[in-house]
Length: 171
Picture 1 (tube, rainbow, N blue to C red):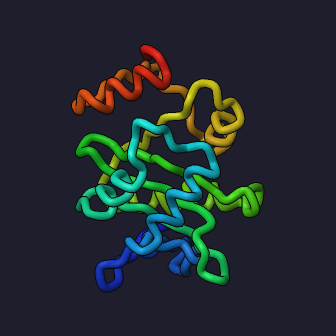
Picture 2: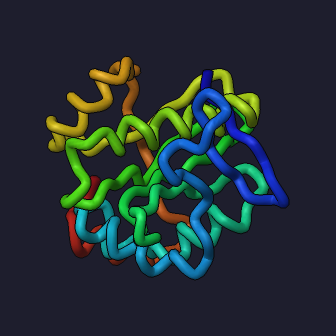
């Protein structure tokens, strides 16, 4: 049975009541390590500030970043989770290349789903770049399916919108 227990304000993901291999909440002091991991995994884009993303997630009452640490305490995997009042969302699932194919992605997704379930989210959604077939396959193996929707967006900050347009062309 999966669950998330809160102990002194920290979020600790659990499976069967036991600590899930060191999965816990990212500390503010680990944001730089998380961003380096996201860069290494190709998740960042120049028009999104991942440090601000992490700071917002950790500061908000409806979001957090779960982290797996090595025995030495290094950040080896992350997943950002949040609830928008209607459903749960998953972002920045990243596993260090040295730790890939060892079950960390699945463990982090189990912890993310447990956290979202505790928040009352009836459904979880995530976005994957359409060109990333390997990641689509990973999520399909976990039971996720194409929701037959198109995600549209734009920046409310005109400078960021201009930067995105210049770097990637119109969406």
